[in-house]
Length: 301
Ligand SMILES: O=C(O)CCC(=O)C(=O)O
Image (cartoon, rainbow, N blue to C red):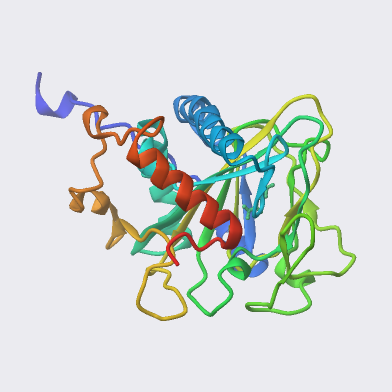
């Protein structure tokens, strides 16, 4: 076949327009509807229950109903799943996430954290007003939270509400206080209800770690699942300025995806290198990290 007839590889259209980028810069958030390809969506959904089961088994063994902000059969935060799942790592380091993070974080991008946030049917608890950075509590470069809807999200099933920057009374990192009962950290107590994100599964709400958000209760008879992937322009450190807060896995370098492949101990993740997480050491490590994260969101302190 003559070279001129070989078709160029299919390129993905840029998911973010200038209008999205401007809204993100000016208001601290923007929303992309229906952008997650079906195969990634299916993979993220399939993996979710495995992590819930693992957490449930641990809570049963401990005889507890809550660990920090995790409340059994009501609300789950299930972090650091990327290195324990092929489908999740494929999504987190996908072309889609490369395009989004390049546009909103910059040319140097690290995976900082990932987690499922699940609201169980009928009893899925609300989550109080906070900045993601409020859970870190000390100054650090703001990072990007990609809130990926795995189910259609509505006010009835506990979607997220965003407070645009122009309606936020205090800019920058705000001190948060712990709420009794839920253990949530709260940083905004005003009466603005925020903007509900009502979008179909496969959509992504993108917001800065300094953008206030909350989520409602799930009153429907179906579970509400989201997957949150967070990317930073620099490693996020603990208050000591030396140790990592959580992950700092290079993803983009000079704007080019594939930097994660430079760490052979972590990636590429293949079936034969996948850490077991149903039994054995890595499952215990995941539980320990998740529990510490839920209690203070600082898995490595
Ligand atoms: O999905 C939700 O309910 C909110 C999750 C959230 O705000 C967070 O994990 O920071």
